[in-house]
Length: 374
Image (cartoon, rainbow, N blue to C red; front, side):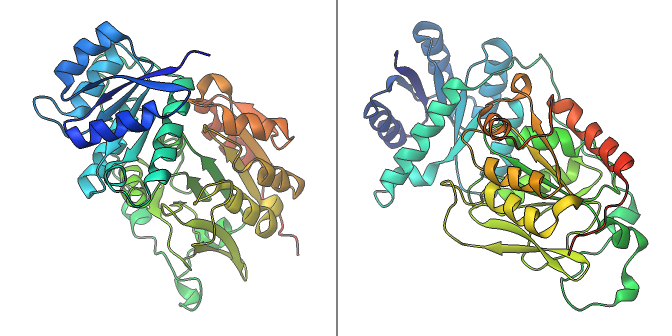
């Protein structure tokens, strides 16, 4: 098989050297060039026609976002961003994913000897995934997503603790909403797929628990970005808080999210247990907890991603009475996780991404209230 041809674009000579060495050490890929800024990169793309680009975000003359936007409009190709672990780095990285980048890797981990083998495995695997990903051309002048203004009633809804509190504070919506829960799992390409679903949901939608494969330092910005765009409230999940309707809870980067029962309510459990299917957070962990704790009151959604994380647990969700959905191949950036879930008999319906939100709402409307099994 032909090797994956990679072009490295980074203003740091050290990072260019490290990435080039990592790539050339792999039997199935080669670094065909390294550019120190986007202008040089532009000419190298024309002359060398790489399969995958690794792109730094902060560079002189033209920053990575401006370059990425032009690239995805004029010559779409798989791009893996090299991001800094800062608040701005996280926010800009999320914008890069919105513009069409396939994935990202955190830059500081590339420039240290400790954990270098782990860094090599991470970046090279993401390059392999990117080389197989589906890349769409971004239309000229496509705007950034527009923030929404939430109603005061939704913004004021409290995040009550799992235990204690005054029962008199509970609103009718909370009492009704604890009956149903939606669980979503995603990996490569998932940030934009999750945004597509959540922005279509009404503010009184049942509680949503989400595991997106993401490292520490990025999920808080991801949640804040989604919260500004969605009518539901979106936040990074915190241990012990109640899962309330009108809210979506995202597993913190590098930590597992589980759903537990506390009386009639669902609550968040966050832990640092060992990775499952090489991932932490793991979709398998979330879906397993939903199968045992929520059962037929759950809806499960498997979105774009590489690998098989969550497939077996989604089958257990289905066996427990949950209704399950998978994103179809045509709308996935990477079809791996949905394909595995379909193959093991875990999926009731396979749908284009743009139809999933409406099907969830239709299912909730027609199925009515389901009684918890004891």
